Length: 66
Image (tube, rainbow, N blue to C red; front, side, top):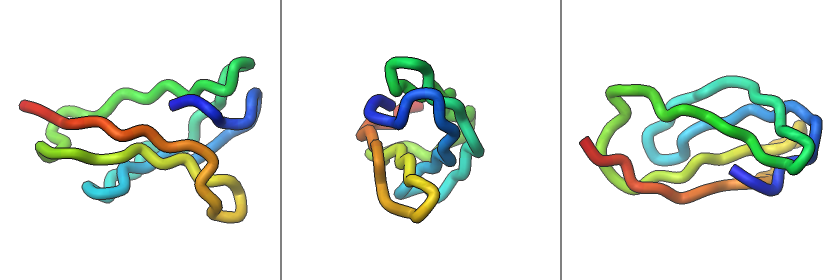
């Protein structure tokens, strides 16, 4: 995911599947790297990174395949 505030922590989750990944630190370029866990359901989903007030600061669409 890109567009996160550089050097700040954010909480990442999957929108459709409802999985929570936890808190991640954005690098100096504002990129957050996460690994989608094994067993995540098939289909289109979005990773969401909200700010401390719940506003979306970054998201990324992807397709989970077996």
